[in-house]
Amino acid sequence: MEGSMTSKYSIVTSDLTVKALQDSGYKSTAHAIAELIDNGIEARAELVELFVVESIDRPSQRARHRVEKIAVLDNGSGMDPETLRQSLRFGAGTRQHRKGIGRFGVGLPNSSISQCDRVDVWSWTNGPDNALHTYLDLAELRRGLEEVPEPKLDGLPDEWQALTEGLGPTGTLVQWTQLERVQWRGAEATLANTENLIGRIYRRKITQGTRIKLVPVRGWAELPGVRDTRPNDPLYLTAPSSTPAPFDTKPMFRPVGGGNTGEIGVQRFMVESVDGKEYPVLVRSSISSDAARRHDIEGEEWPDDVSPSLKPGDTPWGKHAAKNLGISLIRADRELDLDTGWTNSYNPVERWWGVEIDFPPALDEVFGVTNNKQSATIFSALAHFNWREEAAGLSWEEFREALREEGDARLPLIEIVYHIREKLLGRLRADLEDQTRGTGTSRKRHEQVENKAEEAVKRRRAETKPSLTDTLAEQVSPEVSQQQQLESLVETHKYSPADAQRIIEETISQGKHTRLLTSRNPDSPAFFNVEFIPGLLQVALNMDHPVYSDLIAVLDKDFDGVSREELIDRLVGAASAFKLLLLSWARFEDEQPERPRARAKQMRQDWGRIASEFLGADDEDDEDE
Image 1 (cartoon, helix red, strand yellow):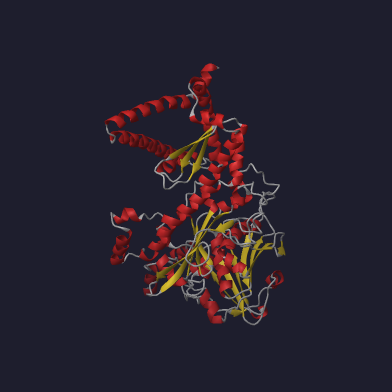
Image 2 (cartoon, one colour):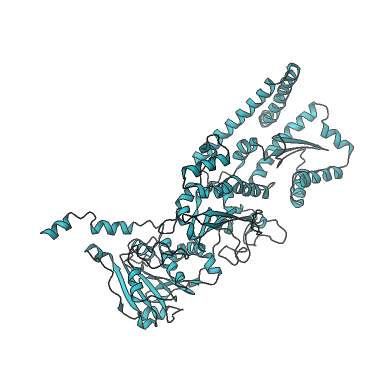
């Protein structure tokens, strides 16, 4: 009677325990498989094989073959009976040290039970025929199983021995069956979706020589598509890699930034851990090469089967980069997470930069590493950290001291976050914006404005006396004008000679007398600058002025893939910026002495009259028709 009462009133039922184990927080089947690969790599395996086995039968003629087994086999060191049994205990694994990629000993049982109802493990240290075998079965757990079954001598099944390439005197096989929660149906779909992730997670290990082989199987026969996983580097500095041609054999990005390590694009920070010691954290950064985003780079033209009219993001390599968006967190040479919280997913340019943070396991508590090695919660929570809002008027140094006095858990990472948010990402985005100045969507929109302005210029030429640029054009040859344009574009506005020449040729061929372009001029208080070149009125928008970022850039950005909500936010923000621009002019007049104020008023009225002609150019053309 006493025993039944204990069972009746137990705090946690076996069913609830099983449900909690199943819901252990793995983001996908691929992430769960990665835990099994971890075990092989920790066991110093040279080859880890991932088998996805389809059933021979299928429910109907049109239905696809269903996956019935997933297995990972490695030729690592294998396990003795005690280690094997411990490996299937929740929270009692054998690799809880802080030097390797493991953490807390939860990987094998948690990842397995999150995907299947039964996991079997064979491990051998004296040949596969002498393997030891044990298992976990959820049905038995629900019936009250309290101990991992004692490992028994049970040779590795012949079917697996026939399939594997790297069978050796030591190794381990983990087999999942009763696959109730696997995301994908067929073998190839499962491998394809897993390949991208594990190629990224283990990119360093693969580059260092570890092979991760992918094997689709039906029944016990290999299917076409057996292959080794290629590295997938979100910084795109690794070659060869899984990036589509031509960037499968050469890096698609280049390191960027001075750094403090003697290596381009690498910044080192020393971070204090909970043990009171300091450990190095490396921040690496890269941006796209010109050839990845432009088809006209001499000697690096796009492949013949890729149209030069495609937007860079629509190329095969651009689509590949879109799947690697975010900051990559590397722990013990294994990717922990690709954190997208630091990116603007609506901006297609975000795919063209890469940032990697490399830290040791000794800093797990500082970064907030989770038990299943899928995220760093403390670091991720800082993605939208705004120190100025929290500082409430304190200087940066005062704010850091306040955090230190309060014992704030974020303090060790504040310097890194400040570097990334305040310095690094802004520079990367600015460099990428400069990379395609004079090309793409923004250039086309400039051309539309230039065309409309040209109509207004033609009318004013007929109605007013010659302008300064008209007069200068009468005094010099067209060749002199073109030389002045080239010097302006290359020397003042930092366009490449090839881009500058192309822009000049376009202006001449279209018979234009106005040109709108973008330029960087951080030392100028003006949000645009005017140049009077013989026969050409050139206006350079200052990309370093808030008017550009708050008004022009938000409207010139590509609209593809942008939600209705963001478009509304852009329009509202641009309208506010324009109104503030008018109010700033009003304040300018307000601050002038009486006579300059009258002159400013006259200038405003004259500019308004000319603006009405430029903005109304299309309307007047319509009336003529």
